[in-house]
Length: 284
View 1 (tube, rainbow, N blue to C red):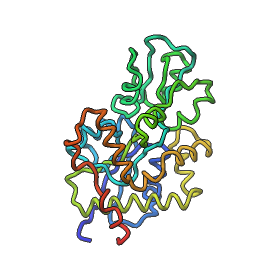
View 2 (view 1 turned 120 degrees about the vertical axis):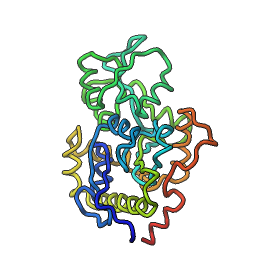
View 3 (view 1 turned 30 degrees about the horizontal axis):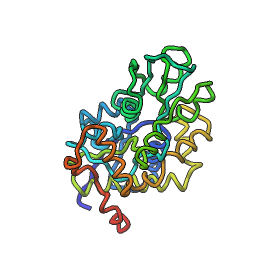
View 4 (view 1 turned 90 degrees about the horizontal axis):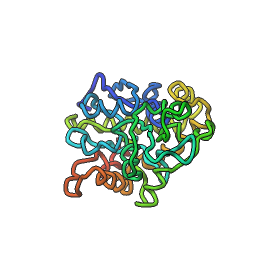
């Protein structure tokens, strides 16, 4: 092929689903003309980097797609969508105050966008790295916490009480998967390079699915919760058919979330890379 990129920087989160998807690349088990250099950041850091256009390929929250769509497209592999599952709202004690202090995992996250829409009551925002929300709840620094990543699977171990599942509320309202985050690729990259990136991530995901035991130590290296059951539960929840390819329902779900960001149907153009040509990869 004519395009060769000596190094392509990619930024993702250390959460198990991202590391799982990219494990074939990280462990150098994928043959590709693209030399991927993977960097890890908290999701809010990723969102801020994406808003600046800092990386050619980056994981970001779908909550800021409206702000990213001028420079980025959603790659049709690697997305995290959950059906009737997503960020959860928990408390240490109930009932919580009339104006609660709410720990949120970042201003630009899908979790924050959903909380604003499903909890319109008055509250005080406290933005924290996602792994600091449970400790702050336990210490009484906040009244409610919106949990993402591994936190949503282990909150009961800490005696916390479920207030609401934002993914369930979304699913009941729209009967669509909840778009949490996706892999964004810069529009100005050559088309041939975009196809190579798409193919490389697809092959990396295929490797991970076939080699759980080989991938698990890598997942544990970056995970907040180290037990295998929690990691596996996380991966099985958020690495699904929509991760392989968004499909019609995935695209519709993302466009529905865009309406929460004030975007009209007629302005939803050129958002995705590869959703119509996915089967072409079978011939590579």
